[in-house]
Image (cartoon, helix red, strand yellow):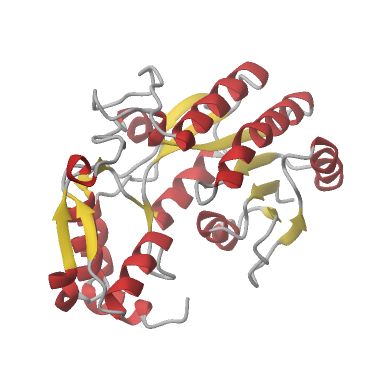
Length: 293
């Protein structure tokens, strides 16, 4: 009999891919505002900030594992929900001996002392980073057997990830896009991250684990690479190179994460952006990009 997996944020970008690819599980997923797509698995409307609502859901579903992907940085309300949702999930998972995998972020660091390992102290710089850092602390306190997965920019082409879709939308309208040459991240292909998370769900590992691509890229380099991947090189002239300082913003500069621990633990290889591009090939990427999204 298949084990039961509950995916929070199942209608989100990562959640959709998890639901679609978790074929070895009996899948349930939550959503709040976004209607669920047509995928296998059972979707449940659930406000994770409502302890009673969440407790009733877990009593019905009885999951063996929860992969918590919900709560984003899109709005202040999204950010405000991060801490209470983490607190409720950690408390209930601990009480019911449910394996909890919490998706965190490289934004728990300020970008001034890379590369960051799992043992690096949290030094958040933004409201989203502060909320995610606090969520990590709460989960470690309430549910020490949980896994805290720190990831970075999640990208994909079938469908396009939100950031790339935003870029392509601007380019389609002939609008210039400013990109930072001094903001460094470690992008990870969504299918690669999904495979790693589903493998991790079957392992006894606990604690913090960095799961990102092993290749650090600036926002500028990453965007140009994505344009090539979806066969939009002709739009490059609309990109404007800038820096965080020139834009007058407060943002982490270099959020390179070390992934040695994950590489040693997982059978799933963590692919660099260059390797993913070589795997997908521009002609295939162009075909996939033509699908509705």
